[in-house]
Amino acid sequence: DTEKYQWYYEGRNGWWKYDERSNIDLETSYSSGETQCLLLLAGTIYCVDFHNMVQFRRSDPTKRRKIKRDIPTLPSKGIAGIKKP
Ligand code: V3L
Image (cartoon, rainbow, N blue to C red; front, side, top):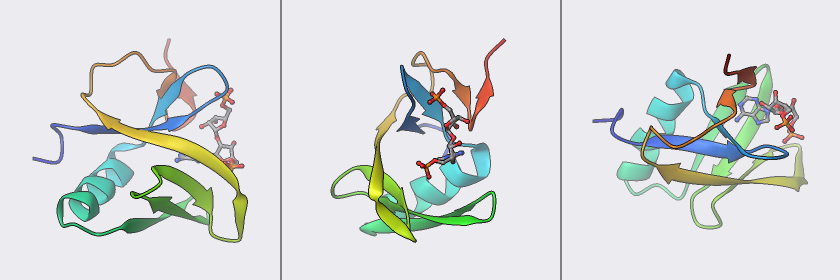
C-alpha cells in the first residue's frame, strides 16, 4: 500500500512530491520502522531522517529540508522538480 501516502519535501514556497520510486522506498522504510532512508537522487546520496522529518545530502548535512508524509492529493509544486502545468 505504498501509494496510500505521499512523501513531500520543502521548496521555496511550497512542497514538492518525491518521485514515485523514492516514494515507494520511503514508504517501505518508514512502515518497516526504520529511522532513516538513503536515496540516490541525480547521483547524490540523500539521507531522509524520519525522526527529525528532514532530508539532507549525506556529504553536507547542514542544508536540511523539511519533509512530510501526507495524503497524495495535497497541493504541491510538482514532482521532484518538474513543475505542474
Ligand atoms: N528530489 C528531487 N530533487 C531534489 C530533492 C528530492 N528529494 N532534494 C533536493 N533536490 P539540496 P524551489 C529542488 C534537488 O537540498 O523553486 C526542487 O526539486 C533540489 O531541487 O541543497 O526552491 C526544484 O528542482 C536542488 O535543485 O541538496 O521550490 C529546485 O529545488 C538540488 O537538489 C527549486 O525548487 C540541491 O538541493
